[in-house]
Amino acid sequence: MYHVIAAITNPAKINAISEAFTELFGPDSCRIESVEVNSGVPNQPMGDKETRTGARHRVMSARQVRPEADFWIGIEAGIDDDMTFAWIVIENNQCRGEARSASLTLPPVILKSLYEGKELGDEMAQLTGISNIKQQGGAIGLFTEGRLSRTSVYQQALLLAFVPFHNDIYQVHDK
Image (tube, rainbow, N blue to C red; front, side, top):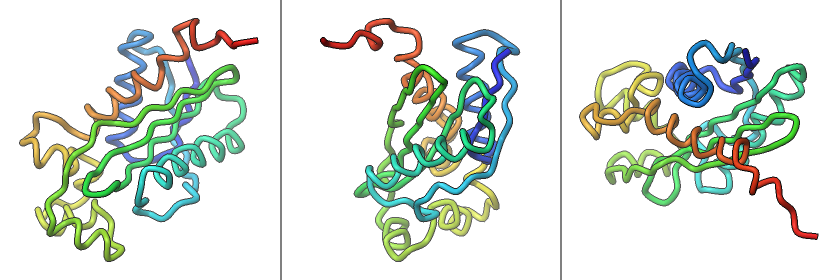
């Protein structure tokens, strides 16, 4: 059983990690320990680079807090132009995998608030009246009418981030 450190506390993200491990390694293949670490970026990262930096920083911080783990995973959601998305970073002692999730175009009324410094989760909660919507289906769940959720979109990106771990070609280096 793998000891996995989730460098996040959001249940939707932790569920995505659990689902990805189940799909890749089978049921009960991991024990997920959630740790709260600083992302090193604002609460609402803006742009691809800042969001990716946040996911990488989460993994780096989690490795310092729990160096004995088998895997460290950071998931950072951000805004790039007019879309919400997330970066996934996975590391073990031999490898790193990264993937960007699918993106969702946000309506102008929400984007205006985000560019004024507000967080997407807070804006979605105010818009819908659903408290903690970001820990559930999120904007993705609302706007796709439940066809997708934060968990399902992040689970897919986690599977992509795991590709270098089980494909030998990623370990081949030019001389």
